[in-house]
Image 1 (cartoon, rainbow, N blue to C red):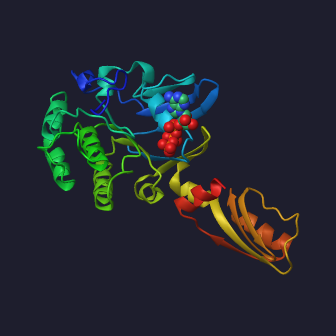
Image 2: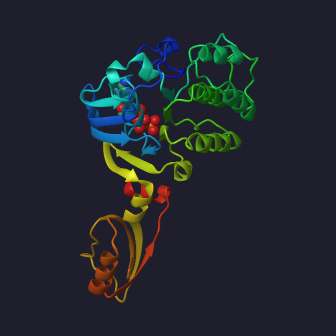
Image 3: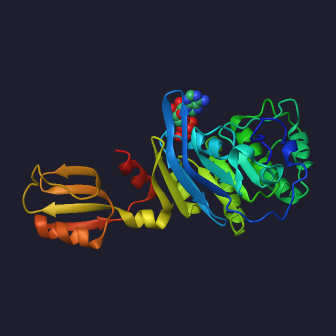
Length: 315
Ligand SMILES: Nc1ncnc2c1ncn2[C@@H]1O[C@H](COP(=O)(O)OP(=O)(O)OP(=O)(O)O)[C@@H](O)[C@H]1O
């Protein structure tokens, strides 16, 4: 595990010492019926998720839907109540040092050593990783104008977040897990980050789990999308397939639409007399044809972007 946190103890990245190359290339990330409760509050309800090498999975969900809890259970930072998470074949609660060394994790709140200078923190982390990419780290520090000679303690939240990303990317991890990594970055730094991420995922061995509320970012980088609602996955699959499946139908009938007007798979209705805008989950061209026939209506089909899909699925 890279650097900003040791997944099991919250201690130094010593766990990465002795990182071994050449382990069997197991699936980077699998959860099976993963469940987590805090007291009597169930936060995750049987989540099945899988990320293959070369995939970027964007994790979406409203505040409190369980994204961070899912990530922490999958990385062995929280113990699941039921089900299982495996990282490169290891049980998440019992990750080997070799497996931890293959993971880069940027938590929602980056913690580091406040008394050290930025340059020292980077050198400290680099010392644990034989494959540390000094050139990449220097480039990233430059791009994000990280103040190498300043102490970590007084860094701004955004600077600390950028440092967390640098530390996670330094060892060139095969699994990169980012829990809202850009929330505090300014627009220029965010753009730089996305550029960096796009460069990183050119390597087909890498898998990325990227949780964010900024859907336009996910739209650019995530081939796979998972949507959590109240601890349950309501979608997991290709972003393109989601966009094929969820459409907005603009319906114009000859007469005001009756009370009984209903569309199979509708997740949102806006009805105004003879006109309706209906978002459906499970669109097919046959559905549009059927609506034209049954309601004697014109039906136009609009594509939605990821943000519109997310919002409509949560109203
Ligand atoms: N240690 C804990 N003890 C009790 N409840 C917790 C704990 N950690 C998380 N929760 C609860 O679990 C729920 C899910 O929290 P989580 O942080 O996973 O959500 P999230 O989807 O990451 O939210 P956000 O988008 O706001 O970061 C919340 O209701 C939260 O209060």
